[in-house]
Length: 134
Image (cartoon, rainbow, N blue to C red; front, side):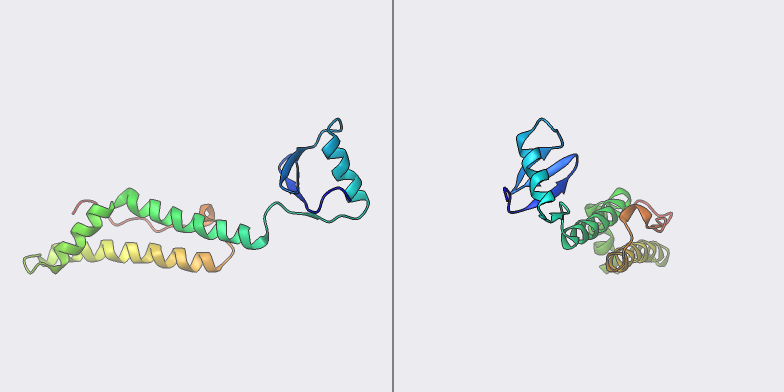
């Protein structure tokens, strides 16, 4: 055997960490084919654990980006500070509660989706409340 580990990688192989394009004129490609014919196992480029970790990170980052697109971190801090003031009107408190509920719904959906098998682009994210500015 020429290589200890052969993985599929795009339009070629990773042979012991070296990228080898699928090219019949490439000696490393021919060596990899020889190994495969002799019984070497060809593994996927990423393990299922690595693929799952990437999926979960993608969902978390998508959720975060959607929240920040509507309510920046500064806006969220302002909402929190405003909630603790005794001068906040009942109407404004209701608006703050809408935003808090939406953010929590986004976070909950993100968590539950990471536990499943859906991809970030498949999730139907809730629309933000009509309240945009603090």
